Length: 231
Image (cartoon, rainbow, N blue to C red; front, side, top):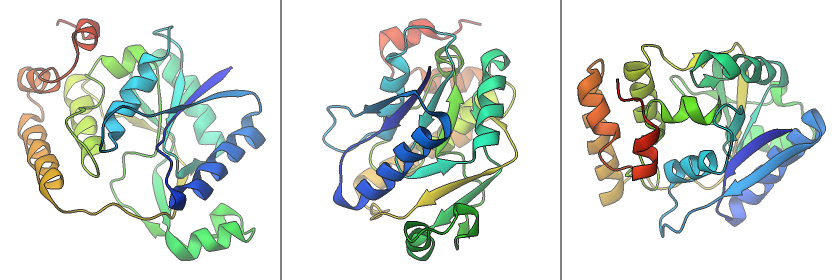
């Protein structure tokens, strides 16, 4: 049975999107183990929820999907990513194009329009939404940095760490993911500024394995540090 981890803290504007994601998995993959994950953090911590989801998997070699609560993949790229992630040692992204449907496209989808026919904005450089991985692959480059809180940058920092420590960017599969509309978080304030500053540290450590290893290991638990390779 496939396990799908969904970071989730209930908010009225997100309920419809969450329901659509769960329905998509039920309709396309049938019997899946969907686990919603939250943490005790006062401010929703997406990186921590993803890490906790990985921690809930007992088998280090089991392939799982980490799926944001607003994002729907295409079936064939997802299945390709699941098959490949079992042996690659990398995290896989089951898309090459990220369609943000926004209010118009989401309204079309809700009214019955197929996802691939809905209006969208193309988000260049997107590296979030849906991940396919094993726990072993996830922790081999530190997972995601839980110092990123609220909105912003945890996915971009993770991407740089993966590329630096595993000598390859997360592997993509030709296809599309569709992000549904919901109330957005503010991209401002002290926490956003702290996230941006931490992201600059990741950019500075890019291509430097020693510096990146120190950076990803600087604020993770002893259990996670134990899982990281020593070489």
